[in-house]
Length: 314
Image 1 (tube, rainbow, N blue to C red):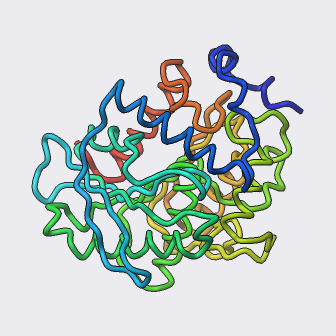
Image 2: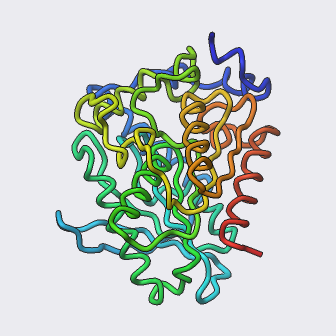
């Protein structure tokens, strides 16, 4: 079945106007060009709608330093809530200072600490999760200096960033680190196999199965299959007990749909308070690419409501 036939009509109409190169498969060979295009697109978007200005904080790590970008809301209150943000990009793209989503958490009154972790293929697993865990521990240890409540910090991410969140949360539990108050997983990239019904759909918009499997190969520096570490691919985990209360959100026409639903079900089965949001007709990241249609507005509103509940925001 072709996923294009299952799209929300408003999304399908908007997608028809996208450039033809949107669906080009990402490979090791063309990854530099994709990074250049992404950087140029981010710069253009920021020129049109300037993002918030963060302060950069370099923190010590085993390999040298990890950069954190700290964003503060205009109406920041002392000892307020915070979001520890992990950016997306298939584990091979993106930077910690890109403002997508960060604006939204700031609008909710949260300080945002965004980690600029090392990406593949230059730095395959476990570089990224180790950077994210290092940044998480620093954030909690320095909550007083940051003016945030250490008991009200959510860990959150989108796509690969959400997959990273899930793995880092498992790593943090096993290392007996301080727990997040809440976990927000926006269409997380969890499964290095995509051996699911949604994984077998053809014609996925924006992020195809072929690009995703190539990204996994770069991130894992090979194809370990079911032997992949659950810290890299949380779908490989069998024990998810002790995870913080969680929201999993995904579109019904997302490559990741079934792995996200399965992970949410596993969390529930092991006693983790979990909210699962599935949006009909929505493709991967569609609420960001095409924000003004009804299903996108519904998805974003549901995500914000979940974060409000998770951090007890007024």
